[in-house]
Amino acid sequence: MAEQQVTESTATTTRLPRVTIQFCTQCKWMLRAAYFAQELLSTFSTSLGEVALQPSTGGVFIVEITTSSPATTTEAGSSDQVKLLTKILWDRKTDGGFPETKELKRRVRDVIDPGRGLGHVDRDYSKPKSGEGEDKGEEGVEKGKEEKKVEEEGKVCTIEGKENCEDCQ
Image (cartoon, rainbow, N blue to C red; front, side):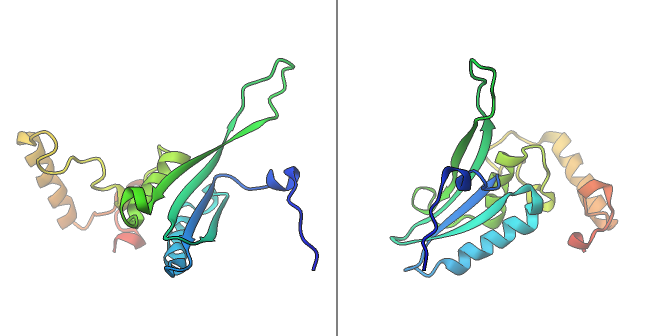
């Protein structure tokens, strides 16, 4: 069997952004890694270049994202070089355990498209938790009443102004 040599031209054909999920095979975390990959692909579809599962050992579960950033122009005026940036989105050892799916989706979104909404996943994301933020006051009470009224009328979905989409039924 012939070995395939990885050349620089082969390495540059990687589609970006690339999410790599490195998981421990000894701990049997492949199914969990595949589930996260499926969730990311179903949410971001063509916004992601690829999602890779990378087997490892030693209790590792790390989710990384690699993106490109155009390098500064050289003196000759050529800006053909692309700088690859890799960021760790989740590390089981430093972040403590495994991410919730919605937290992982938020972290991926914050890197590839910060302005993008994630629908119901973002519903409580920007609100401060009780005791951590400011007091609601009368404005917060009125807002809560309005939200409850909207839910009672059956208009739950906030995605693109739709009243009842498939996901909200």
